[in-house]
Image (cartoon, rainbow, N blue to C red; front, side, top):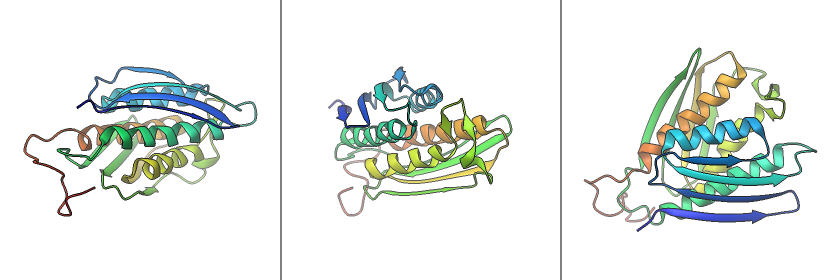
Length: 199
């Protein structure tokens, strides 16, 4: 059964068209209308091996926040839809990823219980403007939105970092690598990986 999803979400603030394939090769086609976010979502697809296509427009003349948030919501919803009943997946995974001076660790549980803990970003990071449109505070907001709408438990910790671009990018890449292994089919798992029998 194909683990794919396509979702279109339109509000007065944005329109998001997103499709993904969990069993892809990391092929991406990303146009979020926010250049730095294009870079981040491309990295997320590439390093998770999720084929990801996004076309989004929104009121970025006001702020990037609405469009960035809505894309994260739709990505989370699509991830949840494509996972189905989660039969046969590894479920738990973690990844520690470096980028020059920056280092981050992501731990994921595809649990069906949404929770997100983000720690370690240096003081003032949330106020940094990255790429002219993207504030550091949006990184945590994206992670929280993905976790809540995908129904996953995500712990993301920045271990070190100085450059705001590197810090943001390493967080996305750590999530990508953890997702890659958590959603991967495990040939030793028979059924749903939970003692409850459901996730």
